[in-house]
Length: 107
Image (tube, rainbow, N blue to C red; front, top):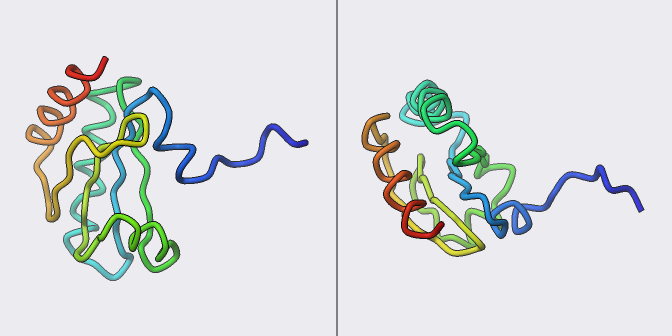
């Protein structure tokens, strides 16, 4: 067994650490606008949340499982449960606030 294998999507979102998933597409303009916002959010929240990006064109099953109809769609998971979701561009201050409020309830 190789313990360094990458975790599956379900393993990533099922842990104790909250995970913010950005469902995006490379051809999507608003998705490209989210990149610096997610970087700022990661800097502000540090280890409190893990941020991962999921390309819907390469991961159609994950996008389908969570009924992602438009991109970008952001979904916050903890222990496999959806704590929050929103489609469209979300400003950094709003994203930090939403994540902080939701993870505070579940710690």
